[in-house]
Amino acid sequence: MSSSDKPEIVDRGFKDKEGDDDKGGFMDKVKDFIHDIGEKIEETIGFGKPTADVAAIHIPFINLDKADIVVDVLIKNPNPVPIPLVDIDYLIESDGRKLLSGLIPDAGTIHAHGEETVKIPVTLIYDDIKSTYNDIEPGSIIPYRLKADLIVDVPVFGRLTLPLEKTGEIPIPYKPDIDLEKIHFERFSWEETVATLHLKLENMNDFDLGLNSLDYDVWLSEVNIGGAELEKSTKISKKGVSYVDIPITFRPKDFGSALWDMIRGRGTGYSIKGHLNVDTPFGPMKLPISKEGGTTRLKKDDDDDDENPRVQFFILIAGLEQGWPP
Image (cartoon, rainbow, N blue to C red; front, side):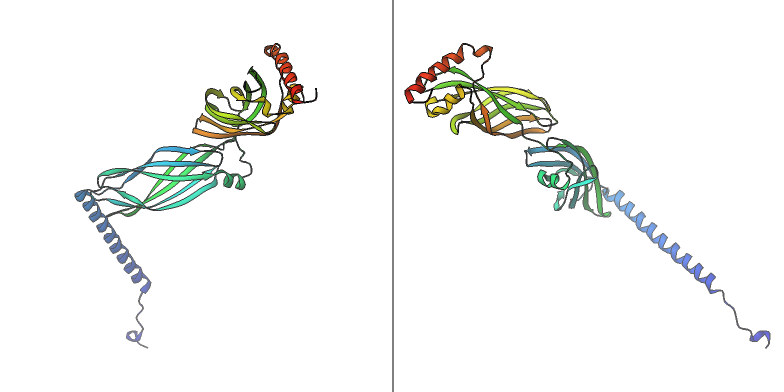
């Protein structure tokens, strides 16, 4: 076989690699060209990326069942055209554990060369939290972290995600404990008696309560002796105790022999129901108070030395007239 008959050997791998380099270089040039065009358009027309920041967090309503939280987000649009806020994807967690998540679609439009405050409303249901995480106790304060992604659609840039993050604390409120310590008689008559109820309030929470007012109804021996709404101002420190005096007017003859049992030291059953309107570091709250099946009696102390004998004597005479056993 002559040298002219030898097959030609072609190094195709080298040529293919060279072709790939040419192709890659071409695509890079196209991308650079598009990027340059985008920058030129941005500079000429004035397009830019919007910004978003958490302006404030409010707790407009909170009670023993839930907390309504509103997050104010300030979005600035530097573009000459309005941009739609496509979605808001949010997550609230505590110590890395999910408390709540959600999606708000079609959240509005940000005006051209303007700014808008967009509100993200969320509601924390305490029963859901406590049933999921047993170590979260009523009365405690837990840390939270809010994460949100705001998705906007901007000409030239396309869809952009604006991430947000904010930390804070939220309470898991617990109702105060209440006891009727004693009853102090101001004026006694069989038809109408004016007395003062000495209430003991115990704050079971890890935060202070500033009492502004309370409403209440009182039952003695299953007889409703009335109620009222009072303006009272006092501070109940966290895990602390405070005392409140409330006036009451009732007719002793409605109680029958139950009042006589109380005077003789046997005690009588009582119940109290109502609400406390308080200020807290997290905003105002209306907390329920209730006590059922309690027992109280006339307690004799230094202030009552002269009063109790008179009351007892009056009730003894009235009781004998009514046929009560001495």
